[in-house]
Amino acid sequence: MTAYIFRRLLQIIPNVLVIVLMTYLLLRLAPGDLVDVIAGESGAATPEYMAELRRQFNLDQSGFTIFTNYLANLARFDLGFSFRNGMPVSELIVDRLGPTLILMLASIALAAVLGVVLGVVSAQRRGTWLDESISTLSTLGFATPVFWIGLMLIVLFSVHLRWFPASGMGTISGPPLGTWAGLWDLLRHLTLPALTLSFFYLSIYVRITRAAMLEVYGLDYIRTARAKGLSELRVAVAHALRNALLPVVTITGLQLGSLLGGSIVVETVFSWPGLGRLAFDAVFQRDLNLLLGIFLFSSLLVVLMNLLIDVLYALLDPRIAVAQT
Image 1: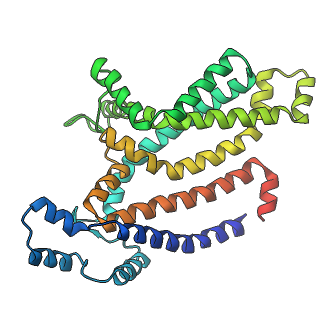
Image 2 (image 1 turned 135 degrees about the horizontal axis):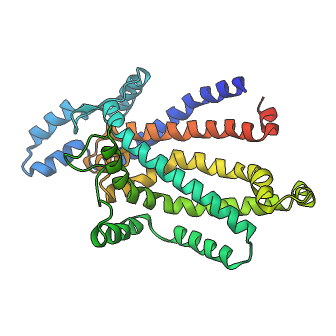
Image 3 (image 1 turned 60 degrees about the vertical axis):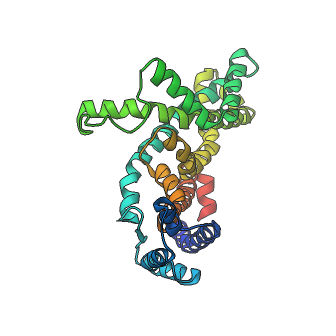
């Protein structure tokens, strides 16, 4: 297993190079740059001033030179400098990483727990009104846009009921996070964004778990367990659920890697100060170095999550561990 993990880690290097190249080419194809944005905001930028800005931001060089310089900096673990924010890209990502991780982990935990429970119940009550109700709920999760869910939650729970805040991560001049009052304030601000982001993924968990449980229920060892007189709850939890969790683990790993893309919409709707909102602002500001850094971080997260999935597979199913060695 150790040799397998080492080989997979070595594969990250060419993957990162391809990801950086493709991201850079796509961003270069987009019209405009940082200087154009600054000129548009000033409204009276002269050609001489714009040329000076391009020289200052190293945008007067060829695309190949800019890319090779970026790779050289990347080899020294330097993600570059965000001229728009006046900070190194690595510091910006670290500052926004905490809020994004809080939102991602809360959303995925909520979706995974509720989705697995509802999927198991739906499989056990196949064909009943309860199964139909859960299936209808999962269909709504697929069909409803994430931003619409967020806006409706704001209208209901923030505007009318006034139960939860509508935006931000904490109250201005509120209690510090290290106190119980600060933690409660964070949970109140986190509730609506986490519910919004988890609703779509909850539908996926319900469908995947239900399908996997129904497949496992048809195997011989499940019939043997029932023949021994075990209760349906014990058959489901102790025998069927472990094998049914394999596709759930796959979905969880992929979602953890790609959840940053979905969080862009949610963080924008709720003004959540995370990486998604930072990427959204960087697109409009044409902050090339910042966008490259965020996309690189997101891509590395996907690659590492895939490796973690393979390791968890081996722990859940020893046959997979033998095949990987």
